[in-house]
Amino acid sequence: MSNGNHVSVVGNLTRDPELRFTPSGQATASFGVAVNRRWQNRQTQEWEEATSFFDVVCWRDLAENVALSLSKGMRVVVTGRLEQRSWETEEGEHRSKVEITADEIAPSLRWATVHVTRNERRSPESSNGESHAVHEPALQRPAGDAGAAASYSAGHEDEEPF
Image (cartoon, rainbow, N blue to C red):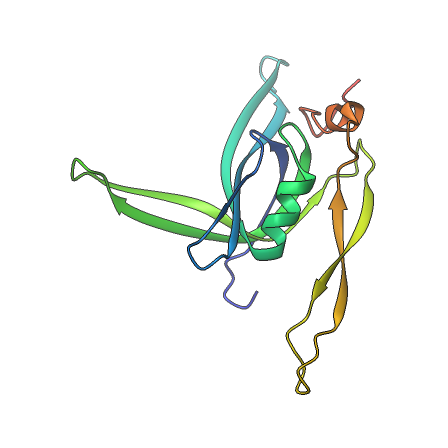
């Protein structure tokens, strides 16, 4: 990313991705990520913790794959750019929010495994009017695999979930 506005976070989904479509049919998904930071206080020798919460937005195929593959509690790696949105409430108050617009989202494999399935999508039509299948990797959450979802819910980066 040439503009220097690049961020990567590793954390747990705070809610299931919400898939929506724009009036033109473009897919968008949004979800939250909680990032835990844990350190030992040098004066008290006690462990302390802070959690930061980030809203994440993604678009098109990434949005659809996220909605099909991820759920609350899963640990993910998100890379993208920070974007600020501003709006005015019905009461006339000005509000703003900074969120991550994701370029890539992946499960963390630190304490979990995944099965990757390639999605078939159609490329734009070629000059002769034919479309060609393009295979792209996508994550697939195993159906009914509660253990996999639970293994994503590790709370601290520096300790094992068991």
